Amino acid sequence: ETGVTQSPTHLIKTRGQQVTLRCSSQSGHNTVSWYQQALGQGPQFIFQYYREEENGRGNFPPRFSGLQFPNYSSELNVNALELDDSALYLCASSRQGAYNSPLHFGNGTRLTVT
Amino acid sequence: DQQVKQNSPSLSVQEGRISILNCDYTNSMFDYFLWYKKYPAEGPTFLISISSIKDKNEDGRFTVFLNKSAKHLSLHIVPSQPGDSAVYFCAASAGTPLVFGKGTRLSVIA
Image 1 (cartoon, each protein chain N blue to C red):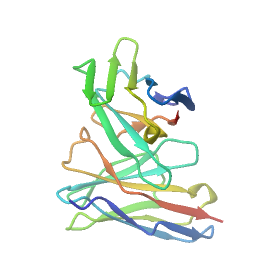
Image 2 (tube, rainbow over the protein chains, first blue to last red; image 1 turned 135 degrees about the vertical axis):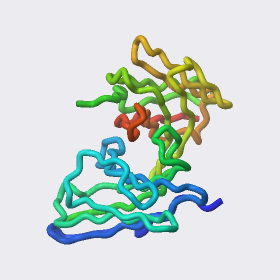
Image 3 (spheres, rainbow over the protein chains, first blue to last red; image 1 turned 90 degrees about the vertical axis):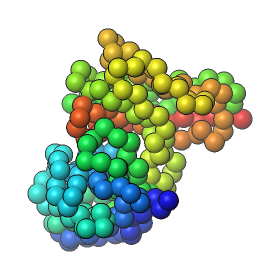
Image 4 (cartoon, rainbow over the protein chains, first blue to last red; image 1 turned 45 degrees about the horizontal axis):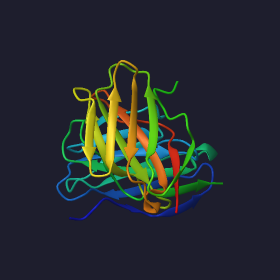
């Protein structure tokens, strides 16, 4: 069973630039969630995708956007990067559209904004 | 406003002893609770969960206890092993996305 994979593993961007992070969900999982983990904090929910539609969003501005593809893989896009966007971005997949099932996380993408 | 709180940033335990990690929550609507373990350079790994209709769930060396009246849950690891050294996150849900605590770093000393 293939787990959740994320790319790239590390990324350095300059303030104001745009970034795209990618995630392949675990085999058999149809729901993808994205989380941001700042240093010393727990993961914070950005949004979730189910059947290629956004299915819930956390307290993040519109410059954070996403996509889900027919094969359930997903992208997180962040426009107009700010220094505070520096964090570990985690993708998680699960088996159903409901929230009450364990999430399976990838190893994350470490984004540094300078 | 933190809905899920892990008040101990770190914990050190001797190998073979019990590790007890604590978590408090404020939202009485939470009905599903999970513990995740995270090693450096890896994503969080699901450990164990409990729904609000139970007060205990056990899986091998790991047991989670839920006290709804106190809005408190704990993770017991017995016996603790050096490989258990990691950051442990408590998470909760109310049919909504998971809300995570800030984590507790467990160090198991051989």
